[in-house]
Amino acid sequence: MPKFITQLHIEDFFSNANKTGISSHIAQSSLAFALSIVSGLLLLDGALCASVSSAAIGILGLIAAQAIKTRSR
Image (cartoon, rainbow, N blue to C red):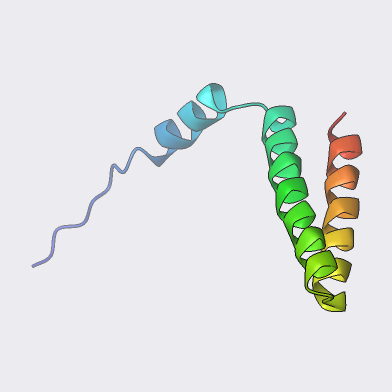
């Protein structure tokens, strides 16, 4: 006969995660910074290799990074 677990303490896990987590402003700023670095590298690759698709994705990434930065303020 299988034994079922009745006390998983899930509420404690999620309530502690909300108390000790980082703020959303810091997370969004970090995400925007990483996105701008990757987008800049894609833009550079598009410029050096004459790849229109890499340059276009790089430009869209930079626009998205700027939108994330202004949204988090």
